[in-house]
Length: 351
Image (cartoon, rainbow, N blue to C red):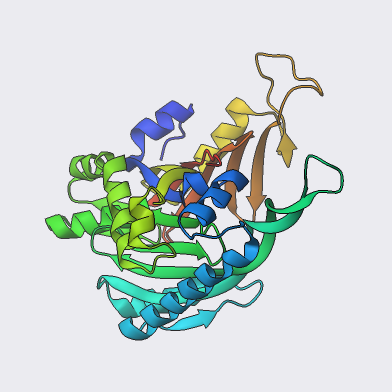
């Protein structure tokens, strides 16, 4: 094998498959009108007919919601368990997903105590110093969250996470690579899967077209599909009155997967990246010189790291809420087998 003189030459001559796709999406599912004290107060007075907006008026909604979740689990024969502190949820859920054998439906409901934003009753100040009245105050609390783990016919494994306290915000997580695997199987295209990616495909052009076809409309459709099937904290009349869930992006991860012809090529990639772009030697952490003056007043931080933990190097480039990570995903044990390398980009934003 001849040694490549540049990154461009190495990537041009030694890639057997390249696909750019959504990796993971973590979505906010929330009701905009209930994110502030005034909106929560209006809801309790107008929809729940409470003369005074108090935290106690929210308790019956929470109790009914939890009862609805328990009834759903019993009706659909979905196991319910409590996650232990420090337990890796993916490891717990994996056997349940495997037993589902790709069949659509919920496979597990998990419960965990986590911090969330909610409302409490506080004493407000009236026009006169002696006049004090109860009002809602936005705060945080440790409450039970319910994780609904399921398998979708088009998207594969996913999960919905609901807070059991007002205003009952939720999160939805899906995997773009699992979506691709489902679409390839549906179209009868031969492929070899990685744990989180595609190693080879009989029709690479069609693979990329399927990745490009994962639109916002399809993502919203799958969220609303499962939202309609799961227990709801709000009544049909309340949802019709405008208290229905909307969706925004909390975190998005995008992947450029490049399958190299052999593991040695992957090692050469990182060696060349260090030589061409960073510095001489093998520093544990280095900083790039940008086209602007970096001072203590420069917002956020600029950093690039080369990590050589064991024998698998990774390259991290971070700026504010965005991160680029270049790493080898799967190294085959024999020199003639391909190597998968992924560049994951994950800009995140709170919505």
